[in-house]
Amino acid sequence: MADVMPPNMLADVPPTPAGLLSNREKDRLIERGFLGLYRWYTARSQETRNWNPDKSFDWRALSPNLPPEIMTVLTGFFAVEQYAPDFTSSLINLVRRSHGRSHFQMRWGSEEEKHADAWENSVLFSRQRTPEWLFEYKERLKAQTWELPFPDALHNMVYTVFQERATQLNYLNMMKIAQGKSDKPHLQGFSDPVLAKVAQTIAVDEAAHYNFFLEGVRMYLYYYPQRTLEAIRTIVSQFSMPAAKLVPDWEKFYETVYRAGIYGPRDFSRDVMQVAFRNLGIESRRALEEGLKKTREVPDFEGGNFKTTVIWDTFDYGMVEGDVKRLHVKIQDYEKLIGFDAIDPTEFINNPAVPKKTNQAADD
Ligand SMILES: [Fe+2]
Ligand SMILES: [Fe+2]
Image 1 (spheres, rainbow, N blue to C red):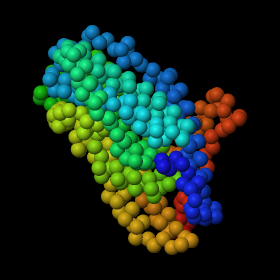
Image 2 (tube, protein in one colour):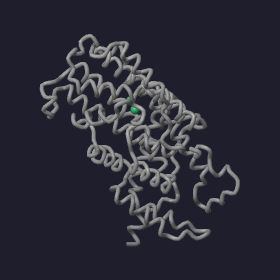
Image 3 (cartoon, rainbow, N blue to C red):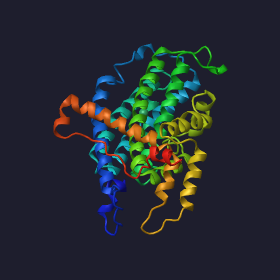
Image 4 (tube, protein in one colour):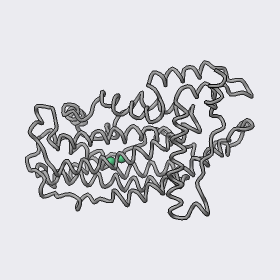
C-alpha cells in the first residue's frame, strides 16, 4: 500500500498506546505472513497446477461447431485475460516493497498468462475466427492499457478477492455448459469435453488466486479492521469485472454471459459477495454498513481510541483470528518441511486490541 510503507515511518505519527502493536509491527507481521504464504503457494502451484495451455488439451478435438453464444463468451474471456501483463506490472509496482506480495504477483501473472493463451487457443481452434482476425483483435485490445482500479494496495487486494471469485464462477458455469448441463434452451444439447476441461483447469487456478488474496485480506482485517472493512464496503458498492471499459462490444459479451446463465448481478450477490463475506466473518452487506456507521458515531477522544472497540462488533473477529492462526500453522508446516523453522520461522502474534471473548461472556 502506500501502506506497504509502514505509516509510522513517516513523521508526526501519534505514539502507539501501551500494550498495542504499532503499525510498524503490524506491517512486519503481515509481510511475514505474505512471504510464508507466497512460498507455500509457489510450491503447491508447481506440484498440483503445472499445466500447459498448449499441451494439456487436445485442441484438435475441439468442436468446429461451437454455438455463436459460446464463441462470444470465449472471445470475451480471452480479451479480459490477455491484459495479464498490464494487471501484473501495475500490481507489482504497487507492492514492490513487499517481498511476499511482489514475488507472488509474478507467479500470479504467470498463471494469468496461461489463461489468456488457453482461451486464445479455444478461439483459434474453434475455426470460427481466422488467425488474421485474432491478430487484429489483439492489436485492438493491446492498443489500450488496463489501469489499476484503485490507487492503493489494500483496495486493489480487496477488489482482487471479489474479482477472482467472480472469474472462478464464470469459468465453473462455462464448464457446466460444456459438460452439457445448461438449462438454457438455446444451449441445450451442446457439450464439448475439451472446452469443459479448459474451463475447469482455469477455474481451479482462479480458486487458488481467490484463496491467496482472501488470506491476505484476513490478515489486514485482523490487524487493521477499520480500514479493511471500509475498503470492503467501497469495493462491493462499485464492483465491476476487470477491463469492462477496454473490451470492444462488452455489452454484447455481458448480455450473452448473462443469458447463458454464466454470470449476472444475482450471481455476484449470492455466489461472490456472500461467499467472500462468509469467508471474512461478515454477516451481510447491511451489517457491514451499520457497523461502520456506528464507528463514525463514536467520539474519538484524544488519548483513547473508542472506535477500535466498536469495530470488533462489525465482523466475527474470533473466526478471523482462527483463520489467521490456521494460515500460520500451514506456513509453519511448510517451513518445517524445508528446515526454515530452525533458522527463521514465521510466527503468529496475536493482536492485543482484539477483545477477549471469554471475559465478555463472564461479564454477561
Ligand atoms: Fe485468470
Ligand atoms: Fe486469477
